[in-house]
Image 1: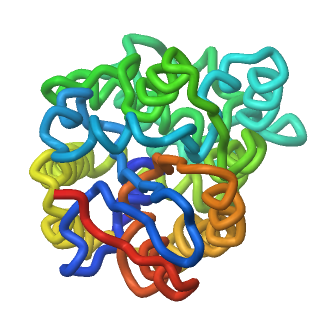
Image 2: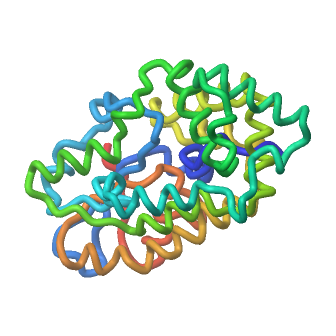
Length: 288
């Protein structure tokens, strides 16, 4: 079964056709004021905000913004140290140890193609770290309008901070680092080799996902991702996290109106956050 390009693509997978909307109003269940939840996509340009009806009013109405992470913490010295440690192969292993000689040549050729660098200087990094670099440069080359320095989650938290709103998160930096870099090395090695050997197809998938998100058509997002579903990935990267978030969100909303800003794939489906909030007694309404 095909593997996904990145965490950003993985968390956009689940969807039920009734939820073709990315901004939702949360009310009822004792809330004095409504909260909101906005689905994002890491590859989407900031211009998508101009297409989300009702976003300006919803953003103005909340006291805080809650993301998966507090994005400003990602550049702190403690986070950078944790990241560096998590990206390194354990026990003195080197990247060539995980592949045949011919496989390693293919990976190195692809890495050179997109980054202009040789893997020799980075052989102590895990496959997931190498994959992140290839994906970044691949998107910059092929996805029109993609700018890694202009992402929705960071932009909205910065905008909220300037407006005097509180910034909170549903997860810690360590949790996200574990997701990115601490999966089994065998899986990481397989994912990196798949990307290298299926570059054109993987790029087409990413373009389809981005187009579907920009159209706010999550039904098409699902259609583009169906062949790439992996039950284990879905459980770890989506469903387990949704369940954890649903234990935290009610208390946050009870303290005051908040806008949750999370990957769009977390919203829909029977085990999605929208359905989870409904099961807890909240009313969910698409902001149109």
